[in-house]
Structure formats: structure tokens, C-alpha cells
Length: 300
Length: 271
Image 1 (cartoon, helix red, strand yellow):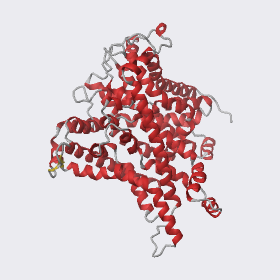
Image 2 (cartoon, rainbow over the protein chains, first blue to last red):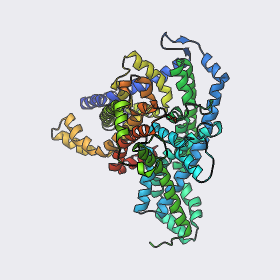
Image 3 (cartoon, rainbow over the protein chains, first blue to last red):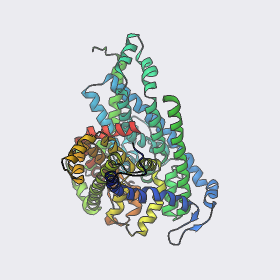
Image 4 (cartoon, each protein chain N blue to C red):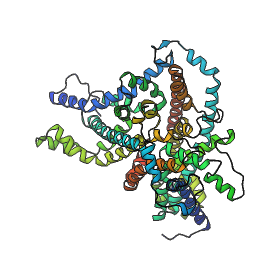
């Protein structure tokens, strides 16, 4: 890569540079407008009182100060963390076990069929998933309660009870995400050198030992990445909550992204909502940094 | 290779199968309910027949026709825009001696870490100010992002410089080199990117929800979200809507499964 700002460019090179700039220009304009400017504006709004009807009014750190005393937000943060703690470990472990098992024992047409099927929920839109699961969760006549009744259990109001609403939403996310991470893990398992495995088999190790001492350490970088992607994705959960519970019952499924939405687009409190969004940004950047640090220490 | 089939392996195969069934069951249920007459959820197999009345009702009476049209236009527009802009940018970054290009590229990549909620409010304000609410442009223009450019650039590396130089010596102009040599060589990446853009646009919800509030400009997931799903609902119709939302990406998946999966594995491994 030439970082070329030379004192004198040859005419041909200069022409090529100009043409190149022309190729980059459309992306530059769109990225500047839709990906970069909004970040700075978001910071700016977070220091203002703004409802779009009148110009933003500078209030300094007021919005941030109010964040710490806001009960809605602290509940939302707790719910979001709980949601992350349910979805990420389960989807990661399920994806890992299924990918490794299929790679080792089902490298045939049936295994590839299973991989294809497990991936299907990934392509279903979150709103369609939420709609279907919402109906499946219905206390009266929903298929899950029909099954429970069939086996002699009482019906459960999955989304209507504070204790069960958040885990029920999380279950949909796990259903939808596992296939995605399974595909990434599977690609990783296929990269494990075969001779390492064979040597271990000759040494008389059990499959469980091989999984624990060979496969898992080799997959560690992928695991870091999947956990990071998973945490960041789950931290931003919105569509499922919007469609399935609307934050309820009570505020038991309010999440950070949902709070941003309600502050901004229901209360028209764009400055305050921006302050929440900036905090979300800081959390996510922190997660990225933690991953980078771990990744560097253990694998380079 | 001969291997012993142990009890553990059989159990594992059964468990994987059970999980696959769990993955599929909600969708089978969705399709089954969408074809039943009854407004109750108790599906009886004798009610199951190819009955499209829920679909006609959803499309005619509940605006799913409009939403379908809007979704299709938005998806086609987004895929074209993202493909063209990303391919051009990747070519410029990889093959042209643009000053400071690596710094700019790092800047692009940095935007990938920014969560959507952060850019949402300013984008909403900007699109409002520009008078672009309730337009296709509002849905299409923001779909360009660093991911597509990164993906295309990874493939652009493999385009040999010698080939481009030889073509230039033969008098092949800049435009023609890009269109007839570069584009065909990076076609696999374009297919992958198209799939990604298709899914991202088709399933996009929050942005279209807030920016296109006119019912005539709603896309499928937004129309879907306006249907209540309590006990007074016509479940068959709701499920017909969900099936309509599902069926287009599903057809794409059936035909382009390899590219779907490879794209994700690639995006994942590169991080």
C-alpha cells in the first residue's frame, strides 16, 4: 500500500489518483451523510433540549445528569443485561456444540441438510418471527400451551407475566441466532487440521478430551468474535420487544434500544434520547475494546 | 475411514434432528395457520387445504399488496445502489493510487462499530429537513455502508494488476476496464453482497417505521407490526402476512444457499 503524497506525482499517477477519487466519491458522500455526520450530531443533540419544532437548546450535561436518576432507564439497563446473559451463552454454546458435532459425526448429506434447516430462522425477519412466536405463546390456544395441556400441564401466560416475558422474548432470539453462529463455527471447525485430530485419536483420547483440549482452544478466536457480536447484537434488541411485549408487562421488557425509541419518537425528547444513545455507544465501544485486548493477548 | 457408531453418536444425531425440527416448526405452523379457515388456533388437519382466502384478504384489505410493492422496490433499489457504489469504491481503494486512501478506509471501517440507535435520531432529523420522508430514497440511500465496501475489497485484491495493465496497453479505456474486466471477476462477491443487502433491506424495521409513516409508503415488516395479535385477531390473515414476508428471502436462500452461508462465514471470520 502506497501512502503516496509525494512531492511530485507523475502526470499519469496524478490522473490515476483523480480517477480513483472519482470511484470512491459516491461512497464517500453517502458515508459522510448517513454514517459519519449523524455520529457528531448525536453527540451535539445529547447536550441539548430538542423536540424538532424549535431549534436545539444547549443544556450542557443536564441530559446526562438526568440519566442517573431515571428509574425507567436503570430498569431498562438491568433488563438488557439480563437479556444478554440469557441469549449469548445459550446461543453460543448451542451453535458450538451443533457445529462441532455435525462436523465430526455428520459429514454427509443428512448433516448438510440439518445445517441448512438450522440456518432457516436466520433469514426470517425479526418482526415475522415475533408475530409467529407471539401467536405460539398465546395463553388461549397457542400451540405451546396446547402442547403443555396435552401433557397435562397448566397453561402459561408466557408474555403476560413479568417473570416469564423477558426469557420468552430471549428464546425467540436464540431460535433465530443459533443457525447464524453455527455457520461461523462450522467454517472454523473445518479449518482444524486433520492430522492434529488423527494424532490425538491414535493417542487414545476420548472425543470429549479432543473437544476440550484441541477443538475448543483452536476455536477460541472465533468464540471471542461470536460472543462479542452476540453481546452487541443482544444489547440492541428492539424489534422483538416492540412487537411481542411493547416493553410490558409493566416495564419488565423495557430495553435500552426500546427506551431510546420511546424517548425520541413517542415523547419527542430527541436530546435526552441522544444522551441514552451515546451511552449505548460507549458501552458497545467498550465491548469492542475488551475483545480486541483479549484477542491480542491470547492469540498473537 | 471406518468408524464405530456409538450410542453417544446416535443420541447426538437425534438431538441435532430435534433442534432442526424446533427451528422449522414455527414456520410450518405459520404456513399451516395461514391456510386455515378457522379464526381459532386449534388446527384440525381436516381444515388444512390450499385456501388462499387469508392471502387475498391480507393483500386486498390489509394493505399487504402495497407493502409488498414498496418492499420490492426498496430492495431492488438498495441492492443496485449498494452493489454499484461498493464495487466502485472497492476498486478505487484497491487499484488506484489515491492519497490517504488507507486512512479513509480505516475511517469507513470504524463506522461499522457504531450501533444503529446512535445514528437514528440525527438521520431522522436530516431526512425530515430534506423533505424526504415517505419516499423510497429515504429507505434506500442509508443502506450503503462500510461492510459492502470491505467485502468487495477483499475480492478486489485477487484481480491481477497485470491484467488491467495489459488491457490498458491494448487501448482499453478506464470505464471499459472496470465494467468488462473487474466486474466479472468480482461477481461472486457481488452476489454475496446482494444477498446481504436484500436481507438487510427486506427485514429492516425501525428505520422504515419512523421515517415512512404514510400507510401507502409502508414496507412489509411495518405493515406486519400494525396487526394486533390478541385473541380477537384473524390469526390466519396475520400468518398469511408473515408467510408473505418470509417467502421471498426463503426462495432466495433455496437457490443461493452456498453464497448465503459462505458470505456469513467470510464476514464472520474476517470480523
